[in-house]
Amino acid sequence: MSPMAKWLWLVAGILVVLVTASLVGYLLARRQQDQPSATIANLNSRIKAWWVMVVLIAIAFALGKTGVLVLFAFCSFTALREFITLTPTRRGDHIALATAFFIVLPAQYLLIGDNQYGIYSIFIPVYVFLGMPIIAALRGDTTLFISRIAEVQWGLMVSVFCVSHAPALLTLHIPGYEGQNAMLIVFLIMVVQASDVLQYVWGKLIGRNKIAPRLSPSKTIEGFVGGVASATALGAALWWITPFAWWQAGLMALVVNLMGFCGGLVMSAIKRDRGVKDWGQMIEGHGGMLDRLDSVIFAAPVFFHLTRFWWAV
Image (tube, rainbow, N blue to C red; front, side):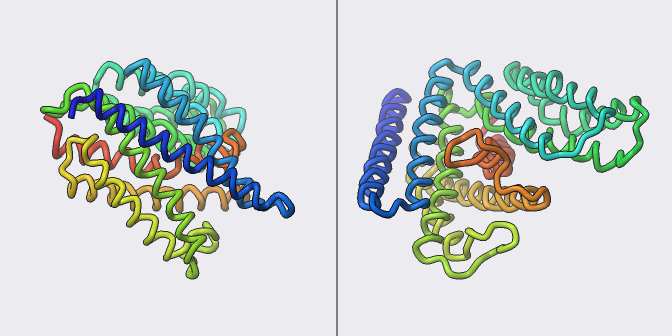
């Protein structure tokens, strides 16, 4: 199958899913007209938001590598802003924060755009990790120094470094797969996001036993098993848009689903520590950017490096 045919089938499949979900949401809302349900209202809000997100992603992909990099850079900027908003800061942190937003973040994506794997893979974990404490120390404010600088470093790691590994998939050279790397990003996003949705659906249908009630009251063992298994099957079924065999696509989907689940738990732990339900209100029905990206944050670097190690040259 030619790359163009793959894209057409992929777009058609996504449209069928969204139209079906919209129709089901509309019918459920009509049946609940006398007694409006908050769950159904939230479901319809999420479906509307997915339409907007799919259109934005499609526009970015149509613009090519630059469009994809700009889209994910914007996601990183928004995610970092949400992270820092929930982090106590002092006047002594202002230069470090400005450096994070306006130097480190653009530099990471420019390095990816220039295909500088040797630098962008260590830029934040090594150079920024060492540089941020130096910048903060020069301000002379030692109050809660370690916790303040650690929070800025962690914000950069999850919001910029980890997220940037999704567009970095475009830089991989995979023999026989030239010009199709964008479909790896679609595969990653579809599988991880489907896992989130399916865990929620399975949990609502048969969920009884909670996994971590203090972190995420809606996550159940039944929902986790059903969601991960269903999304893994979806990943195997999407093997034709990847350079993987069907069983390899299934294994890759299983890995990113497990990492995505762990990412959701970790980011929920941070929210509980800060005493908030959502990272923000940017996306209707979903919360903030980090609420939508929490599973991608942990899945993207692992997916990138597994693909690079086993398939790229």
